[in-house]
Amino acid sequence: MSGKYIGYNTSGYPVTISKDEGFDFYGGYFSVAWLRSAEGEMLEVRAWRGEELVAEDEFELSSLGPFWLDAQFMNITKLELATKHYWQFVVDDLVVGVD
Image (cartoon, rainbow, N blue to C red; front, side, top):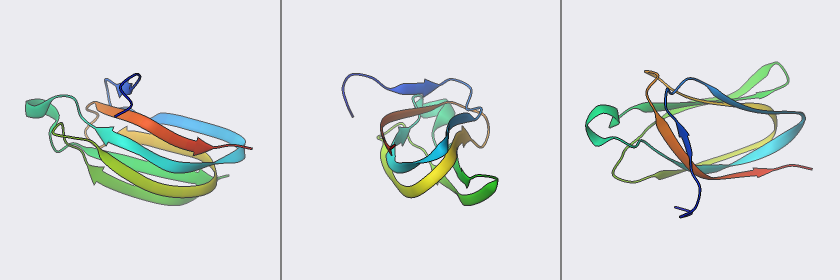
């Protein structure tokens, strides 16, 4: 989407973004890169505030185009992104807010 930089997780193993003082995760674009082998992979999203899990969801990914995850997770301390079957995913235009 941005035309410049993307994030690519080749294994789908969890990627964590954290900040002890808290941050806001507004969303981002997510997809997979390979049509035949990764189409339909599930993105797992979890958010914590301290030790408390405050959000957990999963979304189907496609290589035919990204989808915007409109998360709106406010004042979280940790965000975890992974795929259900440990396959790859692509992310672009993550929007976070920090103080």
